[in-house]
Image (cartoon, rainbow, N blue to C red; front, side, top):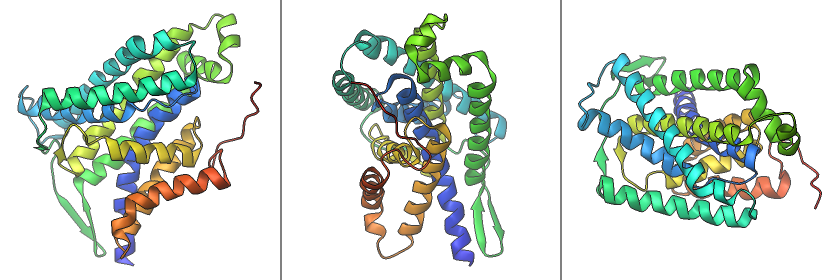
Length: 298
């Protein structure tokens, strides 16, 4: 029983990070109907901003206040990066085919990876302890303070996202553009502003995910976003691409599945199982667990 609870906690901690990344994928898809594959590299940049904040910019670490400061800084830089990517790479292709934008997204991803290798260096870097580190033991289960930080921060960010989307004017505009961009523009909604805000919000969540991932797996490199990004994409599809609660649920489920598989003899196949889930969900329920099939006119 203790082992089951331990794996459950580990899975929720990992799944919370996947959920933050998956939300960025699903928000952009909901508004623009394409997958921003550069999103996983924004996640990588967020982790490196945290590293530079402590090791180069001399922001002290090891306290809750300083950890939150670094987290906020990473979110801010990634939000700015997300808006820049949208303005320079995606906005000029707004009226082009989805395939053109998809290829561009892959190109932006490769650009960020190789630019990161040039700027940050190819060698992995040890991540500093941003928050106070300690271990808590109860009923044979060990919980680290970093895992608690991940869960608490994720819950707060999800709550903030829910408030923005459902209780603010910009959130109402986002939902309107997602439902029908043409009708939204006719009633005076500034489409470009909504899209930029969506990229900023999704990229900020990816930046937070990068920092939270790095404090639990404290070794970062310019290609660190590839596998978490792909798994977060699987999570978004599993929950229902374009559905925010679905993305969060999918992230948690992928994290739990990966963690429980890691504790079995099939641990070497944990990455393959995530993509097997993607294949199954596309075959059996293409709309995802919480998504709904849409009829599109062609």
